[in-house]
Image (tube, rainbow, N blue to C red; front, side):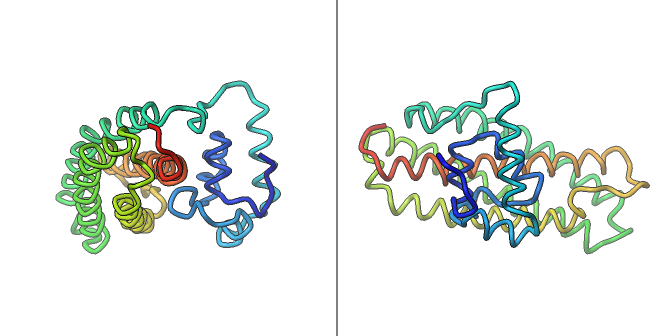
Length: 225
């Protein structure tokens, strides 16, 4: 693929997996905002499109191969999404919830709006993700595996809407945590909470990218899983 400022961010991310690191470092939305041309995404983030393309090219010259899921079967791609992104959340969401509740209990009085906002936003995020993943694993993914992916426009549209909701909650958490940067006086749990939320954001962005820009697009175009 020839990359240029007019190439969609999601297409770059799908065909050049190492680009995800560059996009995340510069605050470029490569999941729900993946349909935007690179130039438009860079304008919103205040970065030079050519600098992004140069950074991607430099990364791709470095050793190490990132799997290109464009070449995998849809079944293998869904197995990867389930194993790499869904199952870890079964443990990570309760872990982060426990830290968020602890930090709110201990430090909430210092900044009630911020700490209550973090806890409530995270709980809303959890309540969105858990049934969302269940619907994918019990309804959408089995449907695609039967070779009927091209008929899945309605469930895919619902998943896309829910992904947008998740992206909005992640944006709010980023604002509430000052981009996941704890203050100097933060205790260990406070720091671990912000680190966990930052890691969660990156994983969810990669997760949504894999579905929006690769799985759903390919499934809607194909009859074979």
